[in-house]
Amino acid sequence: MATFTPNNDPWKAGFPGQSSDQVNPVAQGLIVGETPAVVMEDMTLAASQTIAAMYTPVGLDGSGNLVPAVSGTTQAIGILMRPITSGASPIQGVEVLRQGCLNMDLIAWPASYDTDEKKLEAFRGAPTPTAIVVRRVRAGAIVAQP
Image (cartoon, rainbow, N blue to C red; front, side, top):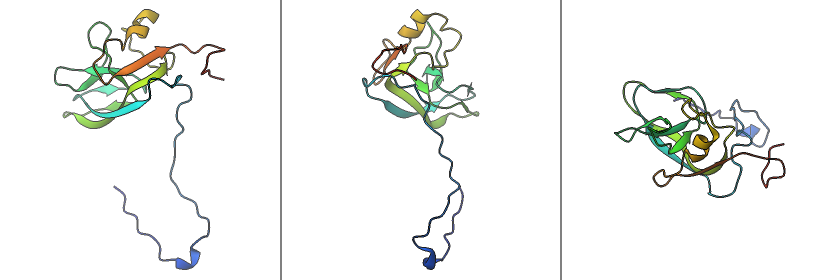
């Protein structure tokens, strides 16, 4: 954690300054509908995991920790919002999108999701609070990409 010591410059109050913060933009086109409402949850990533792609579907292992979802084996319960690598002990506080209407073409599907049918069914039957709807964005749709 960085230590910040503010300057004692009261005569500069009201003068514009510049910060070095970097704000990354939200990926355009991931959310493609109003319902279900977007819900994020901080969850625990299983030990010794490397998930290299943003928006990768994840499921739960036998201990309730996140692992990459595998079609027909590990039920997808959400998508990771950033790439991550965990060490020998589980990492807590990984951002997982658990609800929303998502563009299926922007999700980083694992190889086991090799058909559109598997992608469309990936989150169906997942335990609550998961409520993810995936769909393709088409011209003329209510929410469309430019």
